[in-house]
Length: 319
Image 1 (cartoon, rainbow, N blue to C red):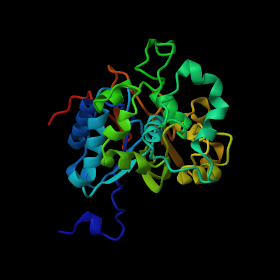
Image 2: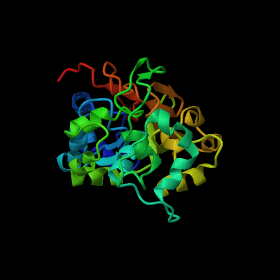
Image 3: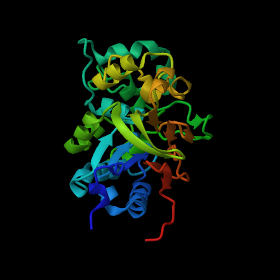
């Protein structure tokens, strides 16, 4: 009997794409979510899936080191999958502190990134250990600093060491928060992981199931989103270059400016998928997958395409 997929007019089965939201150092949540994805998705589809991690692997939760170990091990455990690891704003800052960000393309020093935000240095308690900080990117100094005002009024909780809540990341490597000893404590394979993170990922043909049938879309994955008021090609060029001349990368750190899909992307159906915003928000082709937000009692979520199924670490699935 002929296989339906071998018939000339039978379209190929759409590839499964899993977009996984911010993990923030919660290894148990990550393992549970991965197990649920493995249970929910048929084995042939799961083993050949494109898996896009949307960034923010570190801080807040207690197990950053184990999270990165898990992610580094995925290609050997699932060699037929494709794994994309986006940089989040927290990961960029961690990379800046341990010295693995690409240097500014114009030859300038990282200290040039401090100027615009210098008025915040005292309040945010930027890292300032002599012999280490002098040419560190702004976000590395903010990440490893000690926040002066301990209470985060926006979230209603205490900061965990720094404005980035990086204290738990230091602890996961057995180092006191704010100590340059972390630079030596982070294994080389973890530094390579941080150094290799991409700022944006594009796919030309990703499928969605709709009431009218399968819809073919372009997909752009970026941690926070694309700025609405800037030309998309200009933004993509900047993100692909990982241009570290700027003190703050809006596509990795922004809020309102990157919430919506830029209007020019509506000319061809384009999915824009992000984490970062501490929300699970799906509106048309704009997917924001960050239900966890780094909060201990919130779920870490993923969206599976083409079905648009939301999967959480807390889901109880029949094995």
